Image (cartoon, rainbow, N blue to C red; front, top):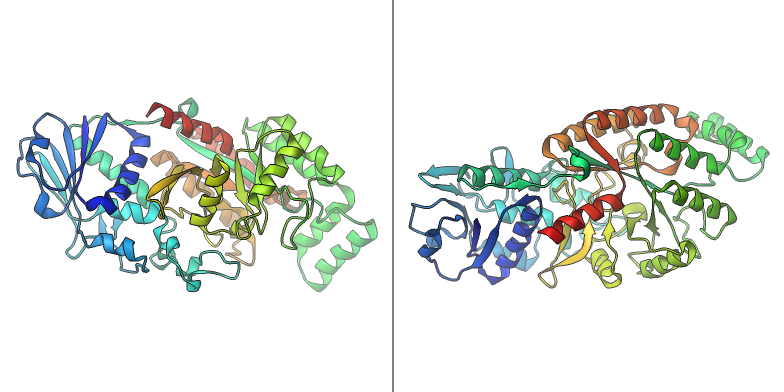
Length: 483
């Protein structure tokens, strides 16, 4: 039995409940949560393993029963109440960054049946998992597209975006509780897989290299080659002379079918498009064939919210339009350009009952934008509750590594990073969500296709589940039904 005793005040208790409920989704134990205003030593008398979270002055005095004590400074709540930027440098416990209650070097101390952690692990977990810094208002936090600026992010300042901070904290909590004698059950992925590699594709450039006359494509190819010295773009236009837009989709489906992998294909559903939106409308005759091809394959069709879908609130109309086009309900997808702010986006999703979203990643860097490598709910900073729409973290995007607007490191670096994150996903039993765009599968990118094929082979050998967002959403849903 696990007893969680929260003594951090009404405002902060709701935030710590959110952290524990996320922890207990993946680390199962019979439990109860008690909120205290005054210490009660009798809480340590019935054989349960107790976690006390609160100020040092309220620590239960009895020591004959197992107890994990995580110290909390009441002043920490002021950081979250005031919504001011938090820029203090982290301290470290067991190589885990800790942000609060770190006036002295934080440490873990063992005393008979007690373990005392002086650094505030739970407030740190909340800071990352709730994307708190992105809730702070101010135009200085926005980039040119109105997105939260990666350059202003705490994760970038202290180089933590590639660190699954919350997973590290949860793993440490699990080890400490097991040391005190509590038996925890770590939940399994479908098919007892070691991890889940979530595959998805945003459908953006469908006709870009294929439309127009042969003369236009030849002229564009020569211009790219001679004037701009861009060999890859020239090869894509040459390819457009001999192949059609459906060939990319056939190539993608064959490649994933070879590995018994499922993928999510995200299409934009709108009647009119913004200049920054993909180069098609789903009402075009050619798109009906492509949508039918993907649907028949058994892969997921998701929604790719348009450039303005969150900022101008057109997403509900696009979702409704998708139903009229497909005759079926779409349960999730991703926003084009990753153009959103987390709190308003999930508030909008909540209002229309969207099941999941797979957009949350910084376009400038792969990693863990909320410090967590598993699906989780988003904390609603306005109501102190949680949104029902599931946040399915996105970890890697091809554009981040190959586009000159971002890292511009090339396709090989993209897969070097993918393989490193795969190792971490296997060792920590995480999800690894990877986005490759439709034009990634052009023959001109044969090196990238070869590296991708090799990556899928390696993932499968390591016992990873190669699947789509829909499968992982239903898996997560089953965990919460049983909890």
